[in-house]
Amino acid sequence: NPQIAERNRFLMFLYLSSLSQYFPVASSKVACSSFSRPISKARSGSMSVPTTRIPIKAQADGEKKTAEVLIYQPLGSDMFGFGLDAKTFADDLKALGQLDEITVRINSPGGSVHDGLAIFNVLVANPAAVVVHVDGLAASAASFVAQAASPGQLNIAENALMMIHRAQGFTLGDSEEHLKTAEILDQHDAVISQTYARRSGRKQETMLNLMRAETWFTGQEAKDAGLADAVTVAKKVAA
Image (cartoon, rainbow, N blue to C red; front, side, top):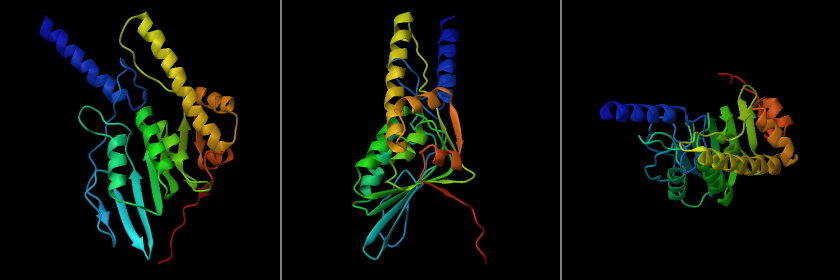
């Protein structure tokens, strides 16, 4: 029955889309998207801030202009528009104008490698100082977005986690398509491991081996591995 076959294909597409935050790489035949919820309007301090689709709070402290960005969702937009895509991030950040400091707070399972790399590069290219705080989880693509922090400014909570692994993906096609995707995945691994190596000061092969093992780090372990600069300790504030 052609209608049943078409329905089954559509259901399989939805299933692959729901998993793709864990299998983030996209070639021409690889499913890639992730689920999250649309983000609300920006809030403003003493500056006038335009409406944005990621949670940004901007304010002026004397002559210093700062912004705080929350990455509390998967990276990459699916066919329903859920998730944080790189274009939205870049457009919303650009709309704030020139800034002196950008604070990025992360709690994300990762998602699209390409969106993660683009967000990383947008932050690195911005002339503002970038301060990163890993609040809960920086896994997969979110872990290398965190590496965009300025030197000495990558902070992770003592009870937060970071995870790095090799790029993964789904391929639809014949054996040649699968072999080609394997080559593309290896290229992605090389790019990502280089990003970790440059930040940590460790050899690229060392970081690639940690990715092969799908390594999870506590806050202190991430610092020891060179993937964070400081571990923040949660303290209650006296009333």
